[in-house]
Structure formats: C-alpha cells, structure tokens
Length: 67
Image 1 (spheres, helix red, strand yellow):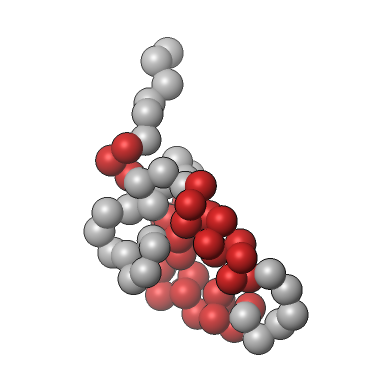
Image 2 (cartoon, helix red, strand yellow):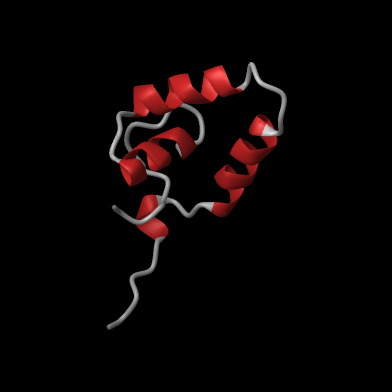
C-alpha cells in the first residue's frame, strides 16, 4: 500500500477518490462509483469527502520520514 496523499494527476474534483483508489489498489473509476452509490445511503458521505479533501496532503507536499 502507498501513502495516503491526493495525487496531482488523475483528479476529478479533489483527488480524494483517486487517493483512496491508489491506497487500496483499485481503479479511480471504481472508487468513484462506490462513493456515488454510497451517497444513496443515509450518512455523512459528503462531509467525510470534504474532510478528507482538507486533511489529505497533496502528493508533492508529503514529507518523507527520515529513517
């Protein structure tokens, strides 16, 4: 699994679905379809998307741990 960061390429809106797709090894389209289908269920999906958009760093701005 890769680090969770919003990619600079392959974004549609904020890059959250693309970041989650990279993290879990699926396609971005699959993750977007899952998100849209989850919006049919009651819950805070849009708030979670906005929170991840704000909290996840952009791919070029992530800092690497010095080991």
